[in-house]
Image: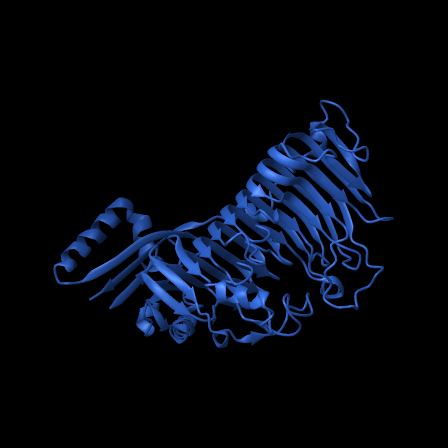
Length: 480
């Protein structure tokens, strides 16, 4: 068997163009008469790789029953030696690959074939226990340690998790049942968690049935999440779609999410632990997102936001049968801030609320939070929103004595459901302005009249993450 990948062949193809490809496939045709088989595909990634292997080369068996945890880890450990020699790619071929948690390496790509299914083990022993996140102080489900995610990485540079829409199935039903019954001693594993890393790409995959959160980049920078389909039963517990957490320079785009919780939840730590850790989420772009979440938000900011959330830009958002559009969740004791949030171009169908902010969310990690740690919510902008079949336009509840300020809402048309509430805007402890909003907003958000839509401007400059592109990479695999 011989493995070739992009960095070795792409230079030839880039120089010789179509002729190079024709020569390559002529060679493949000649060698195929000698019983040589080839795998070939193109893929987009932030970095191409010089070396590669298949998990089957390390004893992996994709029969759906053989446990492949050791095979995945052995393959990645072997490929890690090439981090300074052009990086490496691990190919997951067609099959059903049962595995527990495994750790990634730097300058590395994990690639799932379109017919590959990565099956998360239902055996708790296949998920090592790791320390709670320092900005949370404890596990999210329970005190103390937490289970490592199915795909895990820490202190990495340049890591790509991608494929031809291959599937990662967390087999979460057993985890959900144990969680509901109180039979888990530790926090459930996520499908993908990358910590303290830079230059991260997660793309072109289908994620289903996660035990808990699906994608969790935390303490990372330069993160791109795109082209994901994320599916979970709408009554499954805490199956958030994508949760950027204390991250800088992140782009989420072209994703379709059906969730039992928030489709995207932006976070930065929990109460005194998040305040002490002090790492905000900032410079976040969310665009072309489609969400179905009957009991939660399309985009949630918080409730764990004690490190701060700022400069969030969301546009071209579609929601169907969801509880709320963009929701801000916080509480006394959180501290931190949510500021400079810009949302435009939302199309919402069948919603409980279009706008929802709450300053009394509660849910503390322990009783040691500071009651004087009051979150600051300011400069929150929404514009160009069309919604239909809505129960209530807005529920905006700030904190007594510390109102949410600088709220701007413009060019909004909300069609009401037959069972809609008589009071459409319920506002307390908030301040701001509106323009061309129907139905008429509350008195705390006075209408500025027509022609004031530009008051809620969307930034015209670009964030650095918007300039992070992908290059075309090539994978060739010859086997006898």
